[in-house]
Amino acid sequence: MSIRPIDFNGMVQNTSELSVTHGQEEQKPVVQQEFVTVEIKHQAETSTTTVTKQDNVAENDSDAEGGDGTGYQGNRNRKGEKKSPKEKMPDGSVRVKSDHPSFNMTV
Image (cartoon, rainbow, N blue to C red):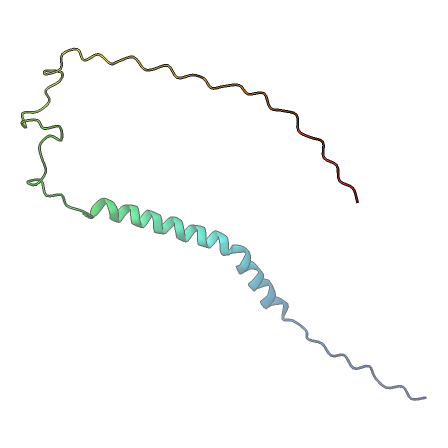
């Protein structure tokens, strides 16, 4: 009987590289959240200093309700407009449901 050495087929991982990779994967959501926060702050700063749309004031009417452009008129032309009382709506109806027939299942 002959005895020969045992052959192992395997791979030894580099543990230092594995710990670095694991640490990077754990920090990935935090880094992404910080990036989003910085990007939103940047957009807010640029939106306060840039003009996105310029309205042409000459084309706009002075009053959307047809005023003459003299400013606020208050209730000048209104004469006690009374609102008509609202119609009373019924609350609904009550219906008695019939009993459900029994369920019979035979095999």
